[in-house]
Image (cartoon, rainbow, N blue to C red):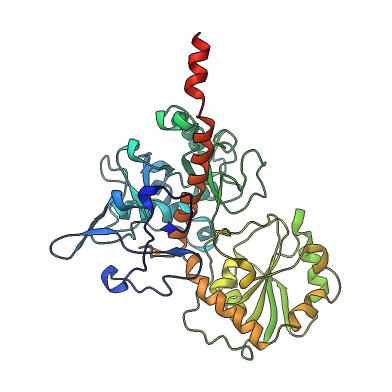
Length: 440
């Protein structure tokens, strides 16, 4: 993935052109959108015309992925290696990620698969980020710890144990990284760690806070540990089914505004109960309690797909997968979360396809309804069409495709890395002369 940015190095100045789906063997929908990013397939081809491994010299990012034991990554999914193997043979079988709401925070899984695919024959990767085996060639160092599933599945104590498997893995990870020459060279500032679940990496996050984190938001982080200057906001993986064919009919979407989920929340999510009592009795509004149980995800998907607007309201944290469920449903998002951070907002203008309402305004009687009812068919259709156009940027899939969530995250990493390197290089300007002064 290449970016129209003055921060790109001179060795990576060519824009990535749109991929040809016939050469990739993939069905690509909207591989390019007007966000200043273009894509092309840069893997080498053999004389027989078959795709071979990606060429690191042409990649946007050269990534060194640590060969951590399987207990840190695919082993957490139940994958058992044969012999001393560390990684699954993805050309044969892909270890399955646990379903349900676990999917929301599965980013590290998709990024790891994409890196493995870059070293696989057969054109499985768009070759945006290419795994290199020599760390001295790397632009960025990927730490393959599946922290979200580690928290979800292994944070509870069992038997007489005084420390959970999740905590043990974090402790081992800190010791491993602190002992690595690659970490100590820049103090971890060129390392990438995925901690998308807001409770993942609780034990290690402060110790590893110099690294670039891939996060859902900053709601449970101190500003010193995580901030927009160094970290990447990644979209949740939506859990409702994506709409593929949709005529975006204003009349056929009979529900004006839709929300279903937990109503009573803490912190910034208190606003949900205020809105519940304001909106629950409106005939063209669906505002109800709901959960993933009893076919709740399917019902939510159907409700969103039949609504004009979908309410994304702050909960225990500023973000939730509800925004990305709405986008997958081609339902215009209404964001009521003053502290929310959004994925790739430096290249995506969310105001073109989302409505933002400040929390104090949202709880004014009649404010939301007057605003939404004042949006006519033409304006709504334009916004919904834009939602439909950008939806593929929020899709996680394997094999990854140009412009999807995996490739957009790699692009965000590259942009963040460029700005971090600029800062580091400026700090190093006078290091040599300062060292010589100290000797005299």
